[in-house]
Length: 519
Image 1 (cartoon, rainbow, N blue to C red):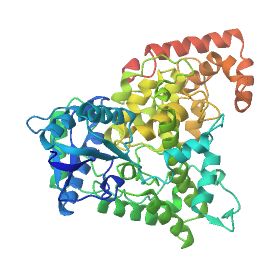
Image 2 (cartoon, helix red, strand yellow; image 1 turned 180 degrees about the horizontal axis):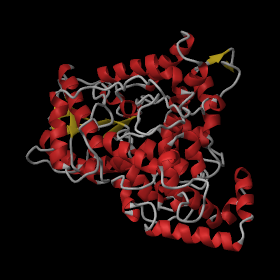
Image 3 (cartoon, rainbow, N blue to C red; image 1 turned 120 degrees about the horizontal axis):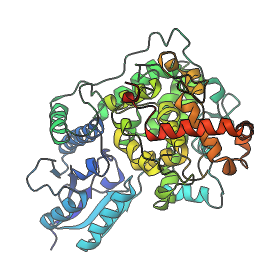
């Protein structure tokens, strides 16, 4: 006879007391299972900030479960007998606890789902996988939406969700008379910089988090990143405080400056809420409602509120749908046949390119970069360099504290690297260094000139842009959104093409860009 009815599996990104896995939970006959295992920090080279955030949040959630009087079987990383992988630890604990059934909220990672299914099958136990109602759109609903569509543009999906959930709507029409205020949300800070920006909503590590930081610094000492400035929310109460601080202090200026960058200031007017959302410490409904309330109360302009809500109700739900309706084949996409290695300095920030050095330094320090830095700095460079997209994916999954595969993989392979051949994006997002010069002052202090495509002082972004167009000219010529760019590259003489190709080859060899390349 089984010793318990249900063993409820809770993963590190499912830290919600109201999750569907707890429906019908009976403390007298059920128990919760959680485990810290090295595999989750080593299947990709997980950065110290990312690992510390997951472990600290898990340990605080364990305390919340105990306060809620839900029996818990929790394995710590350093416990004797820790099996090292989720599958092996679950298998061992099933043998010890003898449940009649395994229950879980649907996971956010294809690899983990397959591992748990395999354990259930090996153990001869039923596995009850329940819908993750954290999200506003189910996978089944997205699949029905996507059926028969040759391309899946987020904008149209987003509009449908606005109508369905009646967000920023009035009498069946979008408030303000338009769906999208992107045109109003592309300002730069100008030469004087951003001026006063409210301090980040940071949280001083408590004893639990300090213990985790010490553990990570020892157990994963060789992993990238630093923990001396760790201040992420690790509890629901802290996450709610972070949401309140954002809507009060940053949301009013978020939209206008959402694409701007400034050296040495990683936080600016962004929300910094993605990690709390992806760990399920926050619910997207409450985040969207808080933003909409800020507009209705006259606290934040419509352009800022719409731009932020589009990230939550639009992009976040959309990429999850892409992931679960296209996996596992989606992860193998390489439409541009890219096979270069990711530069080693992505893990160290040892580059003499000012924009990349700043983005990589803050990434390794905080486990964070804003969406423009990810798309148009680190992602753009890897795309034009021709890095194998699976290496880019592994890096993004490893270094960012908000990285869970369902959200990171489509954003990286689809939006950033065009590896899906245009399923998500209508064109590859490529640009010269002039884009970075327009959106930031990075180029003022850089040894490279974004206006020059060849020669010793040519910006590697600009060189690689023209090289990218030349290498993919045949593929891009039929894309109407790339017509002008392809037309421009067609004007290059054979001699001009040659010098660009030679400079691009030097960049790929590592002769250009690495900090040591110029002493």
